Length: 171
Image (cartoon, rainbow, N blue to C red):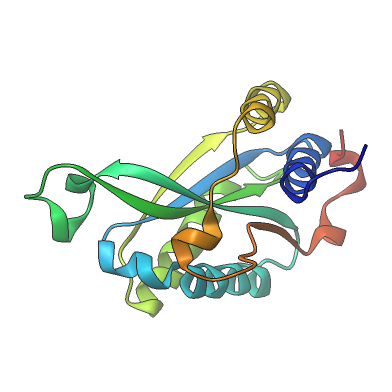
């Protein structure tokens, strides 16, 4: 039986999340709703910035969308209802206790240079969390990024400097 393109994309994401013993993940969210319209360009700039400044480790990234209350955004605080917003999740391996803090500082520095207001959410990551997360990916539907961004073939995930992930970090 042949595999659909959505099944193929899911398999790629699941393999990336489960194949490496990630140390932590960081999700990046916009704080101003108008920044969401150029999210692909902003997040591409962030990935390039992290890739240039990140000479000692590789990482995996995943683009997604989420319905969030409008009051999360500085420019929509007084409105009720929900807003569909893109966010970027980055998975890292680090043997440094300051690894997550250093990466958050680099994200904040990028945002300041770019004139963007962003918030980050970081959490320690392990294989048990990976299994739970990938179980929801297996059973759920992929976000329709093409429709959200009104473009074809939106890249939803990828690797930056994959070859720099230490071999002993692979599951």
